[in-house]
Image 1 (cartoon, rainbow, N blue to C red):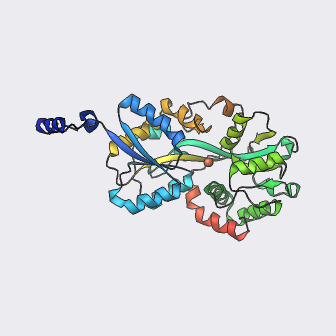
Image 2: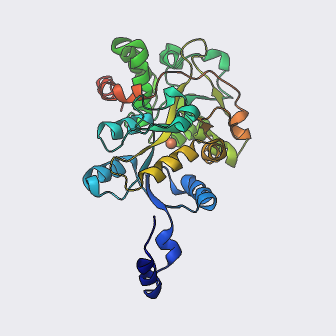
Length: 333
Ligand code: FE
C-alpha cells in the first residue's frame, strides 16, 4: 500500500506508528485452538512481516458470526476442523473459491473441496483403539464388524452429536448406502454397555478402566494420553485394510467471501500447506500432514503405515443430514 508524502507526514506528526500503518495484516477466525495455531502464525509473521490477528471459538459459533457479519466481517480466513464443518461453511456461502496451483499441488484432491472453497491442512484418522489386556487384534477387522455379537457389552462410542461421528456415518452411507449403514449403526448401538461419551478422551479412559474393550476415536486423542503416560494399555488397530481403508478427516481452511485482505489470506493458506509449515501444523496436534512429503511426529509414526480411505471428504457434508437422521432413528444418542 503506497501512502502519499503528506499522509506520511500527518501520520508522523500524529505520532502514528508508521511501521504498523504500513504492515500488512489479515484476520483469521479459527475453530482450532490458540495453542495449535499461534506458533504457526508467529512463524509466518517472522518470515513475512505480515501480522496475523485471530479470534478463536467453537466452529458453529464462528460460522454464525461470519453469517451475521456478512460483508462487514473483518475475517479473511476461516479455519475449522472436520470436513462436515468446512462443507457447511461453503454451503452457507461464507467462503469463496481460490484457484491456486500451490494448493492444488500440496493438498491431495480428495482432501479439498471440489469447488476449491476450502482446503484440508491436516489429516486426522478416526480408527479403532482397544484395550491390549482384553482384546487380541486378530479379533478386530472393520468398523462394521464392531456390531457383531462378540462385541456385545464391549463397544464404547462417543456421542452422535459430535460432527466426527456424523462424518464417519456419512462415509458409511456414501459407500454402502443407507439401508446397509443403518444396520451397521444399529448393531453398534446394540453392543453399547453404557451411553455414548461426550468426548473421545472419555471413551478412551473408559476403555482403560474396563467399562468396555474397544472404541472409535481420532488418533491424536490417544497420542495425547500416550504423551502423558506411555504405559497405558491402549493400542491402535487400523480397520478396513482389505477394503475401503481407515476413515480420514481433515482440519482445514477457506478464504471468506468478504475478505478485505484476500491476497494475504491466499498467501497464508498456501504457506500453511507448504513443507515448511505442514510438519508443525500436523505435529502440534499429533495429526498427519496433508502434504505427503512431510513425516509425522515420531509418536505418530510409531503406529505404522496404513491405508486411508481415498473418498473425497466433501462427501461427509453431502451425507451429513442423512447420517444425523439415521443415528437418531436407531437410538444412537
Ligand atoms: Fe478433535
